[in-house]
Length: 281
Ligand SMILES: [Zn+2]
Image: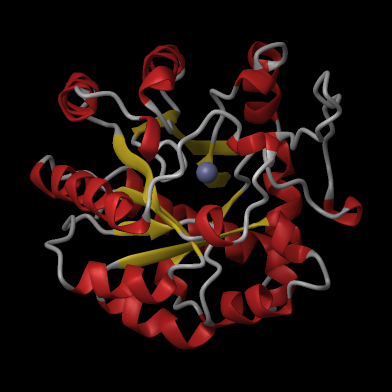
């Protein structure tokens, strides 16, 4: 069984395909996935999909890209979503300096979003970590171009005792031990199998076996063609849609990088997934 530590199965891009995908993924051996909400507007959809699909773990959070557009009641709405679904995790939360320093002003993915300054992102992030701790939930963390500030913040903040995931870990291999000491798990997606991503591939080899996870981030982050096992038609605007079944290609490619048989990596990650997201001992 393969477990997907991080995706966005609620994404509108998957609306035409979702019902078929649910069957197809089970047949392909996908044992579970964490479906991450990113803003107040999608928490209801996340809850509805998870209610009728018990093998999916729902997760509610305010993503750093959406932080600047949050409503005045975001925190009470988040508490309500989390308490209504005791098995839900907290995420996707985090900090992102890329949107401030490197993203193009006309990047279509950021259209209509107010890009919150880092201090504001940190405040919202810390409040969500505090909720995860209070409600005893794991948290899924996004970080782009802000690994130093993230480490400083986590060292100064009471953290969820269940642990937390650094999804699509893009930090250096050198920082892994420091994050792991704080309770971090690390997930890698299939886009890291691209040859040019040598730094990410090197980091993947350094993660302790009991903290390793694999994800798709679907419908984002398509894999290189050699590792793509399933396909979906592109969106009407021509964007590539990553089929969540490509989790299997990600496991196959990443197992090679770790010098493990696929089954060995899958077994390891299944244990880690169950410990972090299902609360198994
Ligand atoms: Zn994500």
